[in-house]
Image 1 (cartoon, helix red, strand yellow):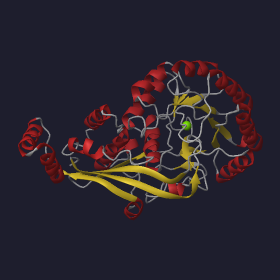
Image 2 (cartoon, protein in one colour):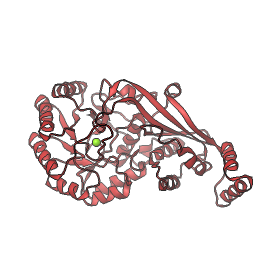
Image 3 (tube, protein in one colour):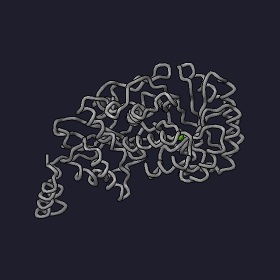
Image 4 (cartoon, rainbow, N blue to C red):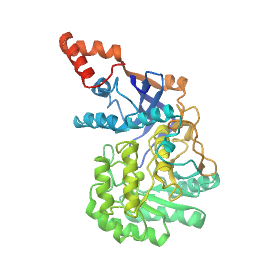
Amino acid sequence: MTQIACIELYHVRIPLDKPFYPSWIPGYPLRENRFDLVRVITRSGIEGFSAGPAIARERQGLGHLIAPYLIGHDAADIDLMLQRLREVSYLGVRAGWMEPAFWDIKGKFENKPVYELLGGRAGPVEVYASTGEIRNETSRVYEAEQRLGEGFKTIKIRVHDFDVETDIRHVRAVKDAVGDRMAIGVDANQGWRVTIINDAPLWDLSRARYFADACADMGIAWLEEPLPMDDYKSLAELTRYSRVPVAGGEIQTNGRAELKYMVEQKCYDIFQPDAVMTGGIAHALEVAEHCRAHGLKFTPHTWTNGIGFAVNLNVLLASGFNGVKPLEYPVNPPSWTVEKRDAILKKPFMHQRGVITPSPDPGLGFEIDGARLRKYGTRFFSMNKRKLMFYTIKEKGLFTALKINSNRKKYGVKSS
Ligand SMILES: [Mg+2]
């Protein structure tokens, strides 16, 4: 029933109304919400989806690398799927972002939301307004007032100036404006510094300490990614020192093993692995469990696109950490709006006064709008059993193709 019959990959480009300048890539205008979408279809017609953010066509070869080894396998066998994704990663392509699609299928097959399948319960989820751009003080204050008016109780702002005093001045301007009406998180985006267009500030421990002190004095709720993500020693030292909770871990490239080590080292007070970027839902939940065992907090990062938001919403609900810290809700009008973020979903994840009500629908809780996918997406890969057969013959020759097929059957892999 959940045997994989077909795999498709789409490149999706949703034009934004205005260019979006993410603080994490100084000087780089994003004119589109751009990502790759995987659609896995089972023999019985169940469809599972996931998405990974894209800069260009970096996943062009991924289909042929992985699909031949997934077709005919059971999509609901998550351990096997994770093994396949791991094998792909040996060759340098990180494919953990595809794992949620298998959970989507498993949930739909068992007629349960993924969070419920994983032992979580539905319940209101408080979200915080996560801004993405560096703005001047006046614009930042205006933005905070807007979000406050919409019902958000917490906002996250970005700092990325070469001068630490400018960063502090910006945070103070927002704090002075909203006072105790709104909690403020500050993201320094030092975890994975990018300098492809403009140079970017590079923090060291002494700057991070100085800034953390200023944040503590202003009553800031948390400080995010104040140092390079692999400077474990300095992170642990800062976290011990800081009076403000230190958060991070969204894109740890070595996944759960690295994150669990960082939990043990207490590199952060709050761990924020993004399931789409650190190896999938199962691994993120292992990290959550490790956080609990070590007395630390957990709330996943969500800033990729609407599908990534849905994936991490399920992670939070399944983690048992819902209600401890608000969940990130990316919103940065006029460029990064909910409508553009979630443009290929039938129902965008709208908040009500800063609260999301999780969908009781089976799977990951969203439906893809087929017309929107056709409009914004280009299918760049599609493989089913028939195409796989021709592909294998072309690549390996008829004799070897038959041998491979018989070996797969012998080792228990049913062909669909
Ligand atoms: Mg962040």
